[in-house]
Amino acid sequence: MLKRFLEYYKPHKRIFILDMLASLTVSLIGVFYPVVTRTMIGEFTSGARNFRLIALLGAALLLLYAVRMLLDYFIQYQGHMMGVKMQAQMRSDMFDRLQSLPYSFFDNHETGKIMSRMTNDLFNISELAHHGPENLIISTISVIVAFVYLATVEWRLTLIIFACVPVLFLISLALRTKMRNAFRRSREATAVINASLESSISGIRVTKAFTNDETERRKFEEGNGEFVEARRDAYDSMGKFHSSTSFVTNVFNVVVLIAGGFFLYAGKINVADYSAFIVSVNMFLTPITTLIGFMEQYQDGVTGFQRFLEVMDAEPEHDAEGAQEMGKARGHIEFRGVSCDYDGSRDILHSVDLDIPEGKTFALVGASGGGKTTICHLIPHFYEPNAGQILIDGIDINSITRRSLRKNIGIVQQDVYLFNASVRDNILYGRPDAAEEEVMEAAKRANIHDYIMSLDKGYDTVIGERGVRLSGGQKQRLSIARVFLKNPSILILDEATSALDNATEILIQSALDELCRGRTTVVVAHRLSTIKNADEIAVIDDGRVAELGTHAQLMEKGGIYANLYSQQFRLD
Image: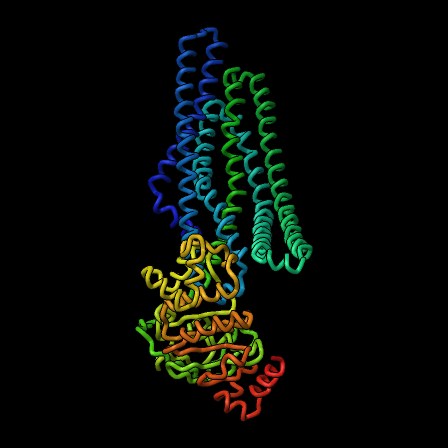
């Protein structure tokens, strides 16, 4: 883990070295003050009273403090910027990894929790990246320099003080594990709150429609309560840690005061050295307490980096060795004995065999949860089947790169996702390099161009988060325009019109009919009247192909399909 963390320093090697040198210089300047104090008191108590020397030492001290001010600015600005740039690189790496992860990862991880790792956790990592080496390396050097200096003043008194240091570290080590665990729980609780908040805000319109604000508040407060308890444990650990270490450092001062007094009384040390010792002991204690504090920061940062690595180490989608690019597909789809499950606990599909000729419309019907959408997700290789083969134009999709395969597939779903961007940008998602004329032509073919032109800013109109400013039909037509622009060989319509009213469905259906022309089309539909004219219909029941044939053949058979159709006809 340490090696992977250090990799992020490589692009910032120069700034890192300068930051360390600046921090070291600041520490060494700190040594100058007790040296001057000792000299000045020595001058006064000896009776020499060399005022010129005192003035020169004072001026030198002011100059050094001016230099220290500039170095402090460099450390605070450039050092933090180094941490921020490392944080940005980690965020970019995490985003790239998220883009490469399979559907199954997002099935099991809430959006808010992922966002928490990308924001809160990475912030703490960047703080460790900046302050960690500075605190560890510079404080260690400062302790050594202070020890050597104090030893030159009075080595026996220095050893007495140094004997207290192991006590400080033993207390810190004893409390470290508890503090680390507490901070990890705190991170997890923060992620729970973020996930709850993201879900509640995204669903605020549903909440208002069902007047369930109390339900959402209760769910949020549950997470909020978990956060309070997790932070209580974290701060309890912190409180014990800081109070214990503070007590020991206060004991240092008492030891210096008493032991130094005895040394002064016994004539082993003069007033100047005793005064310098009292002043200098803080120069010795400050880096030690910084090192102790570093342990807290280290636990915080390491916990965040571990959570970062959990995402980075998640198994990404990867093409099989030797996978080939697919050109323009013809669209012949075959399923040969395909079985699939999502979580390893139960099969969703059981030995499914399907043959969908190119250019034909193939419909999937059946009860919810039967496996229809799973079939649709397997065609673009969103999931891996447990057994069997899926072929496009006679080629196993495992031997085709996912990117080139998905370029040949267009998907229109019931739940349309639109980005908080302009109408143009949302259509361009189908093919980002398309010309303006092609965008407008796609919109016309989707029967949405006239509506777009009626908007104040036309194609530049921003449609809001998830297209909130559009009606369901308008959102669906925008998604159809997006697929028109992509111009795929294979089209998947996953209940594309099931959420629309009859009038809107008729309008959308005409756009879909235009979209399906000349493409292999797989349609999932609950409203059976929309797929009567499909070239072939498969009834999927409990993950199996229960019936297969045209509408007329299935009606004549009098099985599951005929029963479903009759029920819908009576309801209509």
